[in-house]
Amino acid sequence: MDVKAWQERLEKNFVEQGVVGGKLLAATVSAEQRVGSHFIEKFYGHRVLTDSFVGFFAETLAEQVGFSQKVGWPQGEQHYAICLMMYLTMYRTVRAAEILSMQGYPLSGYTLLRSVKDQAWVLCAAANKMSTLGELFGWEGLSEGEWTDATAKKNIERRMEIEKELRDKILGKDSGLKVESQFELIRWERMFNWEAHRGLYTLFSETGNLLKGQRITFVAELDNANEVMYVNRSNETNWMILRLLPYMRRPDAPDNPEWTRKWKILDESFRQMLEGLDALGKKIASAFFEMIDKKFNFDPNLHYFDPGNAKT
Image (cartoon, rainbow, N blue to C red; front, side, top):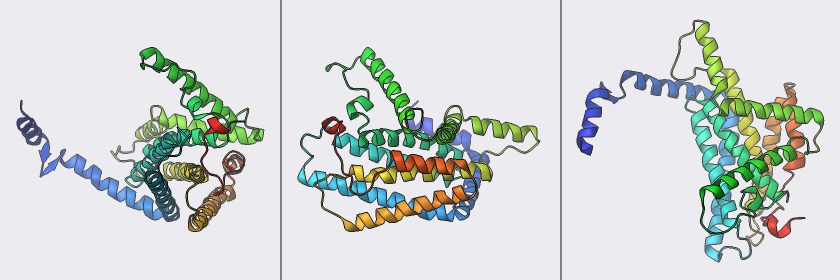
């Protein structure tokens, strides 16, 4: 079957009233727009803060990439380019999560934020000189040459080991955080895993709705719990990234007082947003403040360095 015939067969069988996928898909798209519009209106403050941050994130990244392309990549800093691309990957994932939240899928966006958190932890470890980038990526000590199945397996094992170590150092038993803060942060972390692995929050909540006799919809209807889960996690991960943005900037890049001024406004805004959660009596807020101020204690004076060249 040629491509034209393949396409025509699909259109013949699955177009209904001019819509590929038929009336149920059209209804799904309509519901996405309705639920998403409600989310944007309900969490307008989150929308303003997030869009301000994401725009600032993009400007920072573009400025640093442009500078390196103009003057050349820094000598002796072999990991700087891949470090910049980690920020680019985080940027794209943050945007994808936001698009999902604004289209009626906040828990799908929530799941994507787990990847963002993992990347932020790696950059946090580098900026805190906890480990070299080679160790963080599982490359350290691997023999050079052909990339074999055995090499790939070893690399995966090492990345898994370092991820566990980072968890312990950032929020767990080796973090130095208060015991009660560790408890809250680890519980918060488990919530990520519940939805990221097999979508268990979605699965069990929808099963409960079904057993209560509620109608099943293809788009998750307005649900305050799901929306708040996303907003709180989004503010958390975005604040971690903001604290890490100075690490992206090369020490020889031109000074930018306006960038510093805007960074401080965003930093204060994220703190104020999380203070609102604290005012509601949510214990996770104080635990998160402790982690941010101890593990992500970075400001605009920080610049990029390769932890392999500066490890203590």
